Image (cartoon, one colour):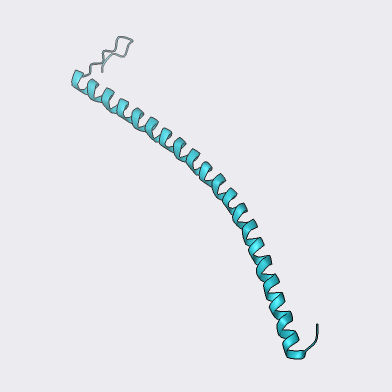
Length: 90
């Protein structure tokens, strides 16, 4: 049975050590790159969301104006047809 003490010798091949360093370094670089891409994407999404909300509000107000003008036009056409049909006001 081997003797257990504090003089443990650990050997590693230099080639394996270099490969481990490259592997760990590339994993850290890939993680950092993904985090930065995700951060940039989140900023772009927030910007697009705020622009979309702004455009929605603008479009909604424009549509209300168009709807009210169309409703007024339809009311006028209705009154005109009513007068033509029955010869009197509502």
